[in-house]
Structures are given as structure tokens and as C-alpha cells.
Image (cartoon, rainbow, N blue to C red; front, side, top):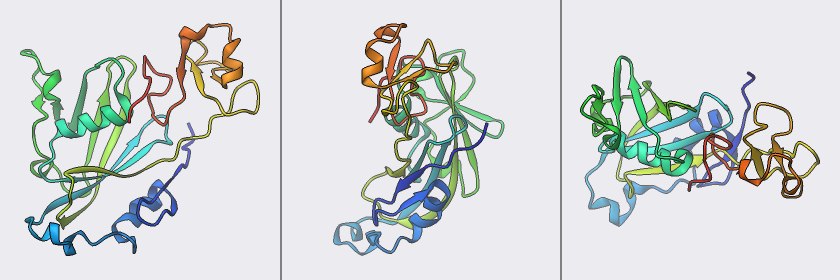
Length: 227
């Protein structure tokens, strides 16, 4: 499956950059505010701040650039990913780092031998490491979370999205208009993408349609939107 290059916009200078370009650009953007110099931040103690790149294995065009302080837990990260990209039916999820596997607190049961995801990133990762993440062990969405950098800082938020891919363009399968729906019945055949007009007469019926969204879960299970 060919990898699709998708761009996003820097929140500080509004440049349009690819995932790789954004990863290099964000730490040195000349228009990025100096948080260490603000009066409010001077009252805070500097902490470790990780730059995280979240990418999808398939489809390949989705990515997030995050910053997380060392105190952020895997539970916190799971919550953000669910809110922004994934949550549809309360599915289970898990992180993996090498041989170690972590289950979010809400997913744990007496029989579950995974480690708790209440562990903080500062106790677990360092630049260059990769976490594997799975959401929904039926129609699974797989993510890779790479620690691409670390700095000392006084951020106002513990966990923040710095940048994300622009919504991928998806044409209607039957005309030139932008698609707004995905037919889950036709998903593995041609003809699954539908604009508003073509969706009205689609033979599978409205109950089989899910909205086109900027998420790797678009068209999967019952996903109907996040943040």
C-alpha cells in the first residue's frame, strides 16, 4: 500500500508542512512564543516536555504532533486519542513498549495481566523510543507514537496538540463533488464514497452511511466524530 503524504499547518507561523517537515519545524519555528520568558511561566518550575509524533499504520495520511510533560500518563494519552480520533463504542485499547504491555485503567479487569497505564511518560520513555497503540481489538486501529524530542519547558498545558494533518480530500465515487459519507456496506468495493446528493439515492440505505471525518476511524465500526 503506497504511503500518502499529507500536510498540516504550523499553529505559530501557519506554514503548510508534511508530517516529516512539521516534526523538524516545530521545535525551531521563529514565531513560536518563548514560554520561559513569560511572567506566568516564571512562577513554574521547569519540567521535561516530550515531543510526540502519532502516526497511523493504515490509512497512512493521518498524524498528530503532540507535546506532553513528563507527568502525563498513558491513561491521559489514551483519553486524548479517543477524544480526537477514535472513540465510537467504548472499545478496549492497549499500549506496548517492547515486551511491556499497558492497559488503560478503565479497561483493566482482574484477569488482565497487563501493566496499568497510570504510569507517567517520564518514567517510561526517552527520545527515539516508539510506543505501539491499538484501539478496538476487532476492527483495530493501530498507531505508532514516536518520541521525537525532549526539552525543558514551562508549558501552560500538560498535554496539547500542536499540529495535525489537514482533512484528506475524498471525492465522491459517482461525481466530482467532495464526499461527505462513507458506505460501510460498500467499503471494500468501489463506490463507497458519497456526496450529499448521491447519498440520498444510495441503494444500501442511510443506516449504512457514516460521515467523512479527519480520523483514521472514518467509516469504521460506528465512528461518528471526535474533537
